[in-house]
Image (tube, rainbow, N blue to C red; front, side, top):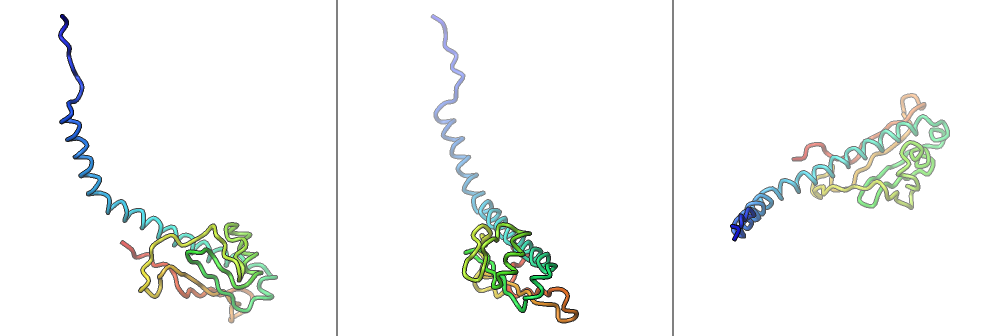
Length: 154
């Protein structure tokens, strides 16, 4: 009779390996969650800066400048809300994901994703800036940040 040569793992060895993997997963889970949250906040910062850039580009449009008094751009968990329809249309040419972001409709493709603390006056999950004619020469726009995402997060 041939002697069997079992080269597989025993049940005890498999249980020990699974146990070690579970301990590692439990130890790393909080750090991984922190990385995910920081990634969401970083994405919010990039989206906010993209909105400002789109407003700057829209400010080069003479039709927008002619009819612009002051407009507010709000960016929150519902999307983007722009209080001036001409500014909204001009910004949508640069940033198509905000098409339809008029004073009654939020654009739903760009949303705040991070969990910003509510007690922070510059965060809280709702960010905004105002767009107005530049008072110095009237031929450009002035962007004033009202609430903006803070880059200082851990």
